[in-house]
Amino acid sequence: MAPVTRRARIASGLALTAATALLLASCAAEASGTADASGDSAVDAATATSLADFGTLADLETAAKAEGQLNVIALPRDWANYGEILDLFAEKYPEITINEQSPDVSSAEEIQAAETNKGLDTAPDVFDLGLTVALQSTDQFAPYQVETWDDIPAELKEPTGLFVGDYGGYMSIGYDSSKFPAPAALDDLLGADYKGSVAINGDPTQAGAAFAAVGLATVQSDGTLDDFQPGIDFFGELQSAGNLLKVDVTTATVASGETPVVFDWDYLNAAHTADNDNWEVVVLDGVGYAGYYNQAINVDAPNPAAARLWQEFLYSDEVQNLWLKGGARPVRMEAMIEAGTIDTDLADALPEAPAETVVPTEEQSENAGTLLGEKWAAAVQ
Image (cartoon, rainbow, N blue to C red; front, side):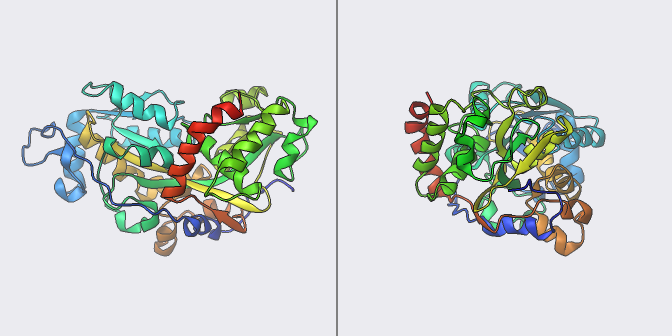
């Protein structure tokens, strides 16, 4: 298969949304905290569930500026254009210092950091998480519905706002075309040409991108999302063949050639073309695997007003278009197309959606997470 090009139509973003069917049960979490930093006892930022609790956006901005800090975690600057997004927030709110903590940790490690630092001013205020970890961690989240809540498809948000989809894409394979032929099928990666060269982005028991790589291998091996065993078996075969490369993927490892073949989201693989002129990206023929990451607020956020302002910022038209600029499909894309606020040039540059796409439901994600916890380590040891 030839590499996917950045030519396809705006509808490719809608296909991802339409394919997603998350059966989210209504969850509840207890929020705790003190009055907002402005001293207004009528507004408890830590228990606010929408902008209405503050009054107006200006009121929320005032409370967040009084806190003066925002702790983010696991936001690499080269991931989905987060660098530009973070810089825009800093420019817009110079009164709020952004503390960028541990940019390369996994979703599971984000939750661990919140638990370890509970009660400290260094605890993360917000999370950016894969679905499986989000489903396992709802007690750690405070419910919040952003002002643009109605634009977010129901299947991409927990009903009370404990966690909410933000941006998504398709699982792909990136490779250095000066060293390897384009893989036309999953089994091509088992060949001798790919000896010691194929990496995934993290540990699938902890990281959403790696979890999705196993999901893609499952459906490309004629399996279904009801049972990830075929995907685990594929990576076991990749390990037995000596082709699985156990190196955490970063921009630096791709630029240096240390990870020359990578399973990752299409928007992340596409970003590596800036670091390697020979880097190409393929979305395999057949069944595609799609997924969204999710935003959530730490129930113990040390800066609860800033956490909520960050959410309002992320779901604004301006920042949704910045995710689009990073090659990801923003969750409000369909509503923005209808409203005429989408950047059509960026949307038209997205790669074409696979003809058939699957996304795991809540139950499938939980079952796959359990199975991976039981079988992954032994399969790739």
